Structures are given as C-alpha cells and as structure tokens.
Image (cartoon, rainbow, N blue to C red; front, side, top):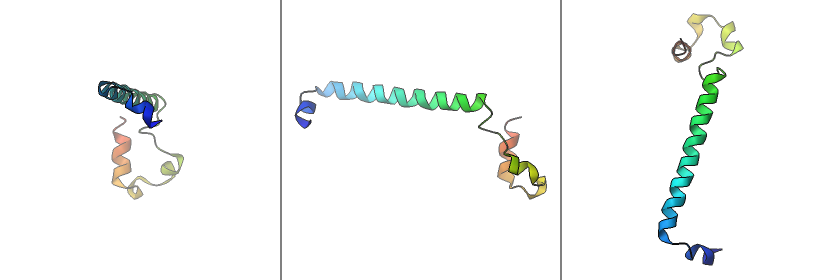
Amino acid sequence: MFAKLRLVPKKRYWDYFILVARFLLAFTFIKYGYSKLVDGQFGVSSSDLQVPLKDLPLFKVMWFLFDH
C-alpha cells in the first residue's frame, strides 16, 4: 500500500486534502441546516417544560430565547 502512495505526485495530496475538506464542510452545513429545519437546534425538551422557569439554568433560558 505504501508503495502505491509513493507513486502519487505531491500535488495530488493537496488536491485530496481540499476534496476531503469540502466534503466535511458540506456535511457540517447540511447537518446544521437540517437541525434548523426540524427545530432540533434551539428546541426545548419536554422535561424542561415541566420545570418552573425560575429553576431552569440561565443558559437554557438564553438558548431557548435565541430561537425567537
């Protein structure tokens, strides 16, 4: 396997790196967009709805308010 890697020109390594980086960025953007569409990013769980607002951590309140 290493013998085959030595046959690949050095310029190709950079091309493969760019290709992999583009796929990772595309996957990240698609995952982010999907979570925004299905209310998975800023949603409140049903267990949080049972707790009075004064007992919730401020971070959870702030995170929920970012949605509005």
